[in-house]
Image (tube, rainbow over all chains, first blue to last red; front, top):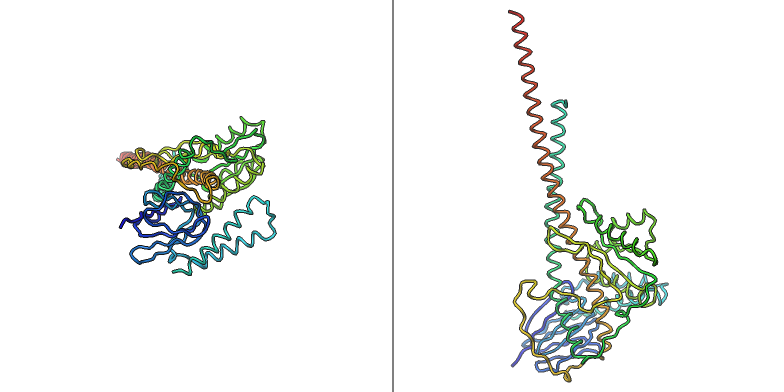
Length: 134
Length: 302
């Protein structure tokens, strides 16, 4: 059976390039699965878990922000942040979330940093929940 | 003429200096290596983003890509982001960008310009001269990662969209090689071209990628919609551009300091050589003088 080639890259480095049977990606409209022969498309990604299934073995990654492009059985994940769930530092994530919440308190919604801090809270929350999947 | 002791002291002091500059050179070389690796590691993403952008453009079937961040308007307020370093002793690294920034301020004295900085050197310079400063993003250097760089870019984009600034420029040292840097003034907002300018495969010395067959135009789906993808792609391109400038600036800093320290080390060596020569000459002169005194003393006793 044909396999998918999955590549995860972040602006900092290439995280991963592997073969897999199936990939489950946190898309702009919820999780979606990709198998070989999937119709080509380009989707936004939300912070969340990304699952790779290969021969019954599952591997979990946390990704945040970015795009997924699927074409010709190639899954290209361009994430702002990506890491294996086993590598997540829950304490650090929690601290980043709390710090952002602290800064949000008393910040008006049209402050130029309002959206940034909110995104941080969303991202770190998703990161902590992805950490439970290890 | 300087006494022997004085010369000895000078030699010792220059030797100490040489030791320091030598150590700094080694440290810079190691840091440069890391900074270069970071630039190389950032390439795949930039290439793929460019790929997506060009796919999006070609598949649009001639439809114009429109986004507020791509739209220019009459410029009344400008933000200039200056990338310098926290530390000096890096040759012309800081003074070159500062000079370029000053020229920019001078040439555009008709518009209101706010200066923001990354790095203490630039910040100190303009603050002392009473320039209107907006913000120092110096904390970026504590840990230069994409998350923080993109937040700065998002902040700039948000200000641009709200009309607080009409254009944002970045002035920084472009990294050409370990020994050469070029000061570059780039327009960050409004974005002039979507492409993040990743080096082509040929430039980085890889074999050209096999051209993927162009998927049928009709088959390609966007989720949620094409415009949503574009809405995210444009700010992303801004962030990547800024991130790249930061990486290049850091690599340039270490490259520049490395060559500066290399020069300083060889200057110190030259100085030690010439001081040693003076020292030995003086020593000989002293010995000769003493000998002559002894001889003439003995002579007079005869």
